[in-house]
Image 1 (cartoon, rainbow, N blue to C red):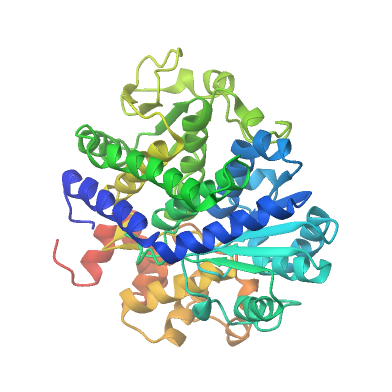
Image 2 (cartoon, rainbow, N blue to C red):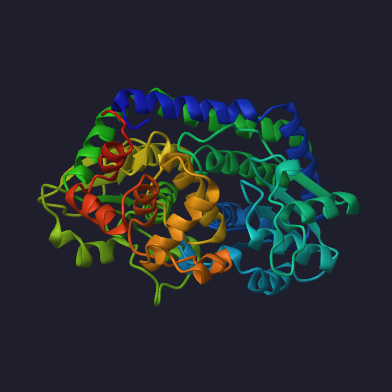
Length: 483
């Protein structure tokens, strides 16, 4: 992936998007129809959509989009994201793993036994979502899960207060009944582990169709879901045939490589997509908070949240905080119609997108490609991922093991050495539970650990990354990979 041209990257993303729709087969449509019928017929007074990270952000937007139609049916949609409203635009360290807080919070959200929880976890791995399913079980409430991993491959390691992990919860719910699992097999992500891409798209397409049918007037929910899915397929095809996309990918990549910033300006649903895409760049790529930012005309009102104490995301805040600092190194991207905002000094492009899904697909391609070209992806692996939860720590161990060519135990040692600046690390450090390491360590923890695994001492690894800040090039040089 890191050697592809922008035209090839655009085609790769289009191919991945088509794989999503191929995965929404008759079996998925049947299960989606059954879930929509259950919601439609039983009308739970509260329908809670819960997730962490991208899943939680999509849960929040799904509730916003369908709120009026749901309320007209006597159903209150309630979004829940691990870490609360701040997690809509910033990663909240450890929030996904806090099963105790999730159990308590989601029990309150579900309310009476006739409530319903729809948990979203693409890998069927998020501890907080498993906790929500446990809360639903304890309340005798209905439950469903959306993921892109087979239930038989759900995460097995135990979480605090949840023996057997996600898989154990799923098995107990399956035995109980009143249980729905939507798990389209979308296949591997284009960038390993980046579930915001194909998995996130599948989440939006399937669950939007389910809710559209559940809160609609037609008794034929299967037909409604099929037709709604077809509308989304048409959006994806418009993006696939966008001849202007490779040029924008090129410009975005040049912007980050040149030390510039990418700023999205949007309104309505396409503006929401802009804010969400920008929010995913720091944890996914180890990006600085100002490298990619999104601003939305409606600000926090679009999420139904008071803005006090939360990061700036509205146009007025953009004008006051960012507008006057722009230079020709920076790129302003209008997502949808051109915003009536002065961005003098910066480069500017307008994306002709009209739906949330179109904006999501285009912006995912722009930000991912830009960070690929800026050296944050090696092959198809994210090499500068932020370790904000135990799942990402385990992913970091696998990345170090694979790229450094060392066993898991040695990869773990290298990560711990970098996190605490001890080479070699103290034995006591290696014996600590994984959650003790989450959120610790310097910038570029994973690239440094890969270099240590490849044979460099920690100080030498630091010098190597200081001399060549494009991480991919540094790793290529020390892993004997020809460029």
